[in-house]
Length: 350
Image (tube, rainbow, N blue to C red):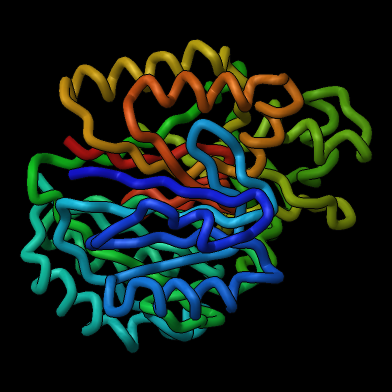
């Protein structure tokens, strides 16, 4: 398996695909103004090659913030498609996914699903994973910008574009990186939540905003930046799913992922992220002495945090020690059936 990465800071697609020949699968990461044109042009350049795309920032050794990035795989069997009506009934299109899983003849050992979503992530992931879990196939993906994705040369709104990818030359494995740990013994029961608006009304029977402020000694204006250091975490067995605060809503807090009444939440604190990243790299290298490629999705909040700490470029250089590393800055990260915030998910190919 081999990964190609091409980019153009000015959005020139021909420049981004220079040197790319006979790919088996292609991912497009473009800017909002050129996305639809890039989708059409990419299909013309590589007709009938399975492809998915979204709007966002791409990266390899450098960030591509406003241009276009192309990530392509060689040495894989791939099938790409889309589940439409993501906000209403993505399960209506589930037979497409079932057929694509059969087409690539995937297994836990050598296959991964990569997805780009427009929203309603939790429902979408539940739908997709209902098929993948039958073969224990992992999923890595994220949410793009502006409510549009693409699959096989077509642009879709309110949808999730996905690709089933089987490594023909080795194993695959998905990873999730969490740069936060529990803060003291704070433990909350959420109530007065709004599932549609992702709102937490109360924590342990007290207004959520005031509870957060009192513990961390921050003003209302500081809450949206404090979440970089102290997001919430939702307990999921032995795992913790990170929940970022989006905005203040009266005495409530609106988040980037759904919280339900009676959910058990904890308060998280930023760890030594440089040390955590090094640990992730070492874990991947231990699992895969020979790495062909790593594709990752980093949260926009991680990008902002790393940039503010002048670490983003260093981070990309450190990840390049794994070999060919490329990815997407997303608005929410997907790991198997989990929709998480402020995380990094990735898949490594042997």
